[in-house]
Length: 382
Ligand SMILES: *[C@@H]1O[C@H](CO)[C@@H](O)[C@H](O)[C@H]1NC(C)=O
Ligand SMILES: *[C@@H]1O[C@H](CO)[C@@H](O)[C@H](O)[C@H]1NC(C)=O
Image 1 (spheres, rainbow, N blue to C red):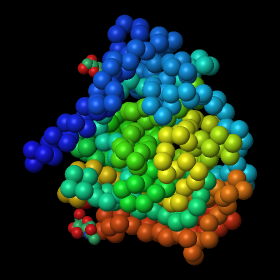
Image 2 (image 1 turned 90 degrees about the horizontal axis):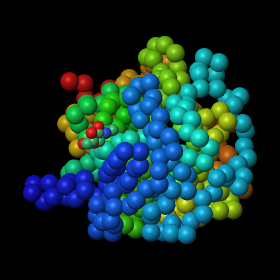
Image 3 (image 1 turned 90 degrees about the vertical axis):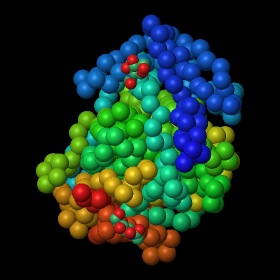
């Protein structure tokens, strides 16, 4: 018990603490590899959002991600060198579904919005990970097992209920891995409710990754590494709308793809496939050139998942179908020719749930525009 507590304290201390003083901003990082206070350039602009979120617009070249030891001489890539080929997803959204995006923050060009958030909370995002005593995981969705250079999907956005005081999270997630066992690099993006990280129970846009060599997980800018270039939207941003059970449905396009020239892993979202930012290839030991696993689906993770599991997706079982259960559609992988293709659903793909009492999957289909599935459930209904 004592040991566990000690581990937790160390974890807490090893994340970025954001210290604001006057107009300037400093990122203070505790931990063995960096105990200095890193001085930060002036905040160009501070933007207060309607819901209370506060963003600082920081010079894109002075972003905290660049403090990663492997990014010492990294030159920021402002645009992907090219976009993957493939059927335009624009035509793929049913009329009854509206596109949703993270809130527009609109920092000046040349800066990026970084949300003010002191918290370190739950940053683990290992849907394939082995559950430990401290962190349990349940997942429901689709998995692909072979070489990939990216993946994409349209995800139905809901706001699953998660106990505000728990350290659990509930996410709709797109994840790419490479490696095996403990030595697995992971990158992921999606929407999630993560109260111990964001301080509330709103669904927000996040990215995460695991450094398989140092076995360290990071969420958003909680540790350096992910390079953001989008000046209009921030990590941890709320979504403009969320779907209503039995009512209006909202969905978001999301993709992660490897830049064929720079080898960086880009995250893009929205109708216009807006490049949000990237993980530099040099960040990884196993994911440098390609991935070997993809997950699309819902997952919940945290210390009380086994005793009091949060909702996943809409909080309703997959069998309820359209408008009531959450779905993922147009799920595709990026092949070696930089083209999005639908994986062979019979061979390299499986779909399912880790615990069908809590969460289910239904209506798995493989079609030309991609694979689709309904997933989710109420968790432990008390
Ligand atoms: C961060 O912590 C400071 C000091 O504890 C507090 O005043 C501030 O409200 C916190 N900010 C957020 C966004 O939680
Ligand atoms: C599924 O979850 C329920 C409720 O938490 C639990 O009782 C059951 O043992 C779990 N089943 C498996 C296969 O893990």
